[in-house]
Length: 312
Image (cartoon, rainbow, N blue to C red; front, side):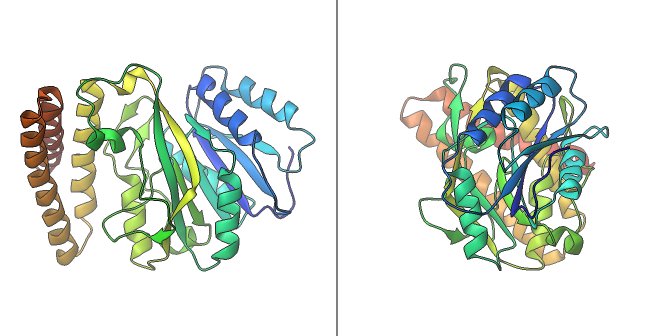
């Protein structure tokens, strides 16, 4: 197994049965512009794939054999994204880890931006990069701008800043100082995606809540930029319904272990989001976009149904 001595960052890609997307992601990570002596490694965590995932990895490893920043492969047999992410953390050879989705296309300076950030901000505990979406199928009429975060869009502007207390990095482009996991624990395996099924969503927010209990050193890095590809399976009403329901379930689970103050703050935020959804519904109706109006309201209703379904 190829390794690199003293890498600064391990870039972890957890994957399950998406060999074609993984191929594109690894190609974009090999096509980087770097002006640094710092080294890194790419670690593919295969979560029991039955397609060409292993073959795709072998092809990229062979093509990358002379690079001083090699790629590695491990197989995690416990089914679930949180299990795969936790395995990646344990397998990492670096003091920092960055998680990337398998369906991304990295900008040419993504790796350089992450290396520069952690080099210049040694006190930073965690960070998130900018994500825009690319549709691989026709965008539905009901997919408004306000639903784009549901399929991965994450953009807080063009300047480095600390995350506000109510926001946190997205899982498709987030990094950590590895030592924080020894302090706050790993990803909660009760939450998240397992194979093709999505259980209670919110494993990333739950982890960042624990990190925030220790420190507020969580930064947004606009130059760590990538595109998230969205296929047709995530552009259906059923997908939005399942995501919304799982968000509600995840909210209920998270709130079982927080203080009264945190519980009330979370509820107030959700009430505010509900009010905003009603205003958006009215706006889209008045601007003759009934499909967008309907979906905005349905999305919020489905979240509440997921919450109360778990609460009963």
